[in-house]
Length: 320
Image (cartoon, rainbow, N blue to C red; front, side, top):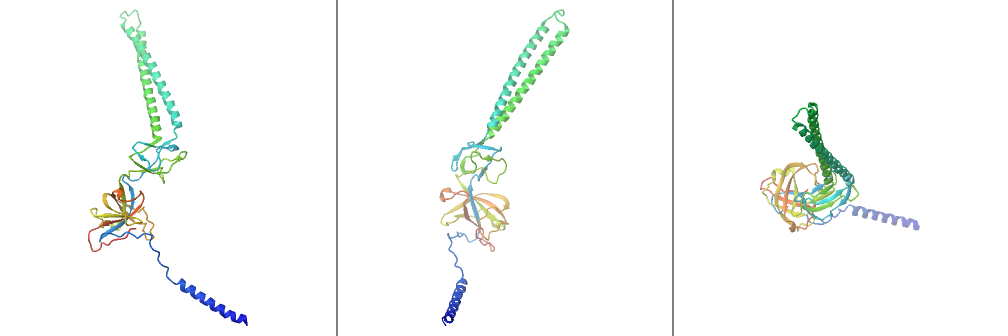
């Protein structure tokens, strides 16, 4: 009797629970509030694009002319540097040994040239003495010919010795040049933005996926803006432009056009937006702004809005 009364209760409870699950599962998921409100365009008609902050000099990826082990890194991230200042040193022990050999070769070549010069002076003196004798009976014609020939041979040997000296000097200069190239120096005044090499690591010459060091002139920053190819015809280089810091639209700065790279390229700078097109091409415009206006770093993204001329089909787009 008790079992017959419990089963209906369990059935009813199961039905009510299933109903609750179905009803609660059918409710729309509430939209999460944005961590930061997106920036809005201050213009009626505009082009919107994503901008990447970079140094005025662009971000210079430092490589190495020769593949060697790194002996010493002379800078660290954040260091202010001057042009021609050493950045890192490559292992030069074998080149130093070669340099010592080249110096010895040059010393020997110079000594040989000195010997050849002395031989020439001796042959010249003997020839002059023979030529000064007026009595043909005192010296034979054959002896005169021998002395003239000896003088010519001595001149040729000196020329050869001097050629070896020049060759040794060229070899020494070549080794010295190689030694100089083992010290990688800064091409400009700027700041060290990134260091990706350590002492003892192998520095590979040629094109690299990751630069050994990255430098930049941060006295003024640029914003590289990608303008979608479908909006290029609307772009007005004289139009006003404003940039908002990604993540906080309260930080903004008016931009001044620095220059345009007049070559439309495949889009490389991706924002991560799910609606972003990656199969498009973009025109890149570089704008400058006063660095002290915004707390920004190289590589940060900005939302950029560029004013366009009025027109019936000119509608703004959100940055992508």
